[in-house]
Length: 129
Image 1: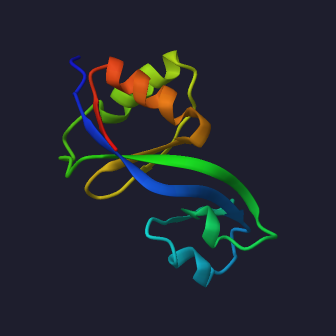
Image 2: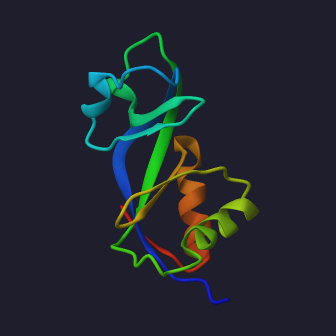
Image 3: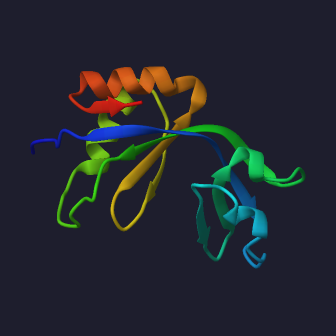
């Protein structure tokens, strides 16, 4: 299988992942960020948004940088996340992935951003800052 060569851009925002109870209402602060994602399951309500927008007192994992795959990506395209996770796995870098209708986003800890860019570039991807 040929891996797609992708162009990614670094979003200029520090993100956090926040966990609330599964029956919690979606708080207004979740919508303040220029980038946010809300996922409800039977087990939890997860919110990804700007670290600065989350009030104190919530279970939060802050300090995430985010790379956006330039899209839109066709739904029939295969191997997109694999082509990103393969070099990052070799570099021992963990990701948190979010997909939208048009594209994919990968979040990595901010202190691993430079290593992420190096690993992805060496694999043939292009990174725009």
